[in-house]
Length: 256
Image (cartoon, rainbow, N blue to C red):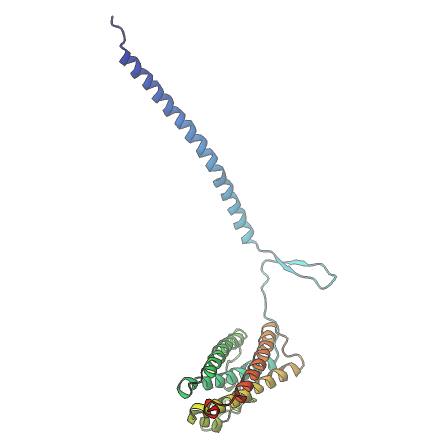
């Protein structure tokens, strides 16, 4: 028989420690997996509940003052608020009105070096171009033509191209063809003067259109249209004051 050497005992001890270490690691991994699995499980359950609730939306109709709200069936669909013919005609007419203002501002870069006028023109062009898009979307969503010419043309008008439809009449404040021709031919300080006079006239016409809208019984009740019309009124009143101040300033040539 032979006795175990010290090296052999050391090897056996190391083997046991390695075996214990491996088994401890397995237990520790099992504990960590269980701990991490719980949030995943609960998270999945929460998501499932959210999917279930999303599949059956709750539609609540607020009650009148002093009255309780009531729950409507999930199949309930929203409808656009009623609009009057005056609403439609206002939007169609304002599209035409804004389009001429954008046409006027497009002349500025090639007709004047006035930095103040260039800045004002860029602001008017940007805001009114955006508003044209809004009005077109508003009309299209309600199945209405975006152009007064389209709305006013009868079958006879469509076949007879020799005379323009009556709907093409100028809106309040719009420049006449003669005024637009004079503006296109002017340069420098003369262009500045004609532009400011013409755009003040143009803006005042828009204020008349807004007033006529709200003076019409039952018109202007649509929330989007109401916000647009009141914002346009406020903006154009402010711009009229700016242009009147610019018009009162003497040109650089006169200051010398």
